[in-house]
Length: 369
Image (cartoon, rainbow, N blue to C red; front, side, top):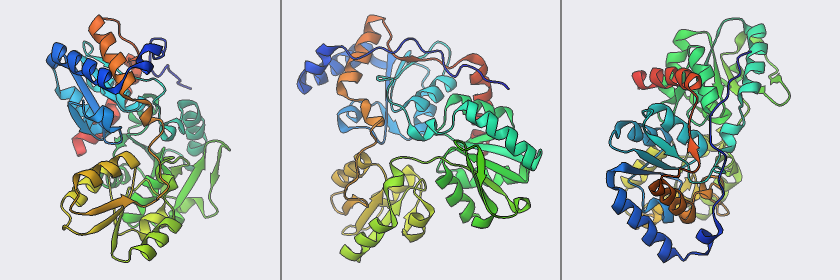
């Protein structure tokens, strides 16, 4: 089996206590000072799910792939502070030059979805799948996955996908092989395949913990193999949420992310990527009501920006993405001050061989999108 080191990170540094004691005003002043001093040498990226206290200083905002592509296009920046989660910073490091340095302000900012498919589990599962189906499977991985998973997929002839292009990429994959392994998010895979007309009966779930299929049908009929993973945020939106919101607001529009369960997507009025959700609400008629099934920071930001509409969370008890929110103003301040001093903390460096396979997967997607 081919198992390589995913990233070559320096030891994780913890936030010095003094930054925890600083006032918001002092932290904001320090960030502005560093940004003014470093100018275009420093590029701060902020994911849509980030806190407002961080987003206010972002030079660019977007979803994970958009931000990585922005980093790749920016040849002037020597340092990239990626305010997102670990796999996003990995992708940015893969797509940027060797001279550019990518820093994740807090190494604890991981992604539970990406962590649900590690390379050891994937290689073991792939062996079982090959025995069951032979050389009839091509893998696709959601961009929300580790560099090691992207590397594996790239070397097997597969590609990465985003929630925006998942349909196009799945259509392409089915022209390459008879079956598709979709990892690590079973819900995005199921919703995308179903929208393409593939019945649920032709979708088998692979349980990496139990190392077995969860499927009771005829294996000859399987077209899609879904890795049993999910987003911990979007899994919290339920059928009960939809029923309760419709009862309370009969005139509401419900829009959800395709990382939500199939049952929730079926009951929603609209489903699509983060960019789709943002654009749909932006272009909606004034006075309309929107219950949104995605991360709370983004929902609150949309509500504050588009005050001519009523915008609220589909789940009234929803919280923000806990790992994403480990990146806060103190961590951002500390990270960029250390960059200014020439003492990088929490630098993300993807190993060369892993980067090569990952680039294959990313390039196939970019060429087709």
